[in-house]
Structure formats: structure tokens, C-alpha cells
Length: 117
Image 1 (cartoon, rainbow, N blue to C red):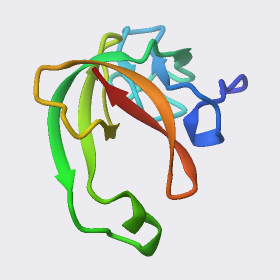
Image 2: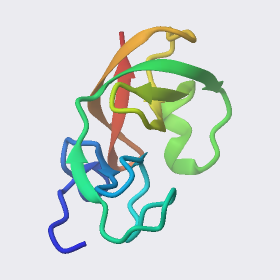
Image 3: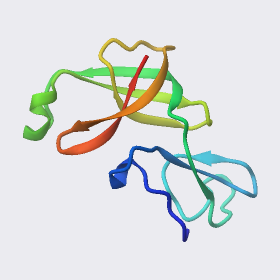
Image 4: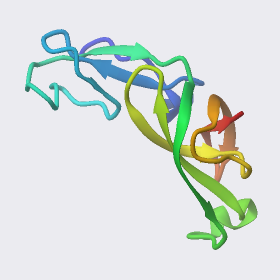
């Protein structure tokens, strides 16, 4: 992987996923190989930020002192239109099956993906 696209983990307002040129598998976590077939160097692509809520969990107890100011906050699993599932923050009123779009918000000192209707 030589040309890496900046994403939210590097402070950019983007979600980056990988697509295998050999088998077409899509994967969210960056790897130097395809998790499905083992082919090297999957291609990096920028996601649209659109998806559907698969699961949601409202967090009402802070895990760390840095997250205390954000309680309650919602953690969602989103099935993206590109075909991968990711965990992110989301609006507190989201329900399973809602169509959502990502924006980016500060959370505990970092910029994170935030999904809302």
C-alpha cells in the first residue's frame, strides 16, 4: 500500500475502505492484503457516507473522563452502500433500518464519523 488516502483516523473528513482487485471483496479495516482471498495491496477508495443503520446502542455511562461530556451518545453499526459495515457515532434518535449519511463531529478530542437521517 503505497498511496494511502487520508481518512477520519488521520483527521480528514472521509471514510476510506478497500476493494480487492482480484476477488472484488470490500473491507473496512486497512490491511496490506484482502481478508477474503489473500491477494496483496487492495485498492483504497473513499466511501460516500451513505448507509442503513444495522444496530444501535445508546451509551449512558462514560467509559473515560474524556467521554463524560458526551453522555448520552449513540454507537451505531451502519451497512454502507459500498458493501461494508462500520461502527460509528450517530444521532440519538436513530433506529434500525434508518437511511443515514455521515458527517464529522468532535468527540473526546478527535474528529469522528457521525451518522444522522
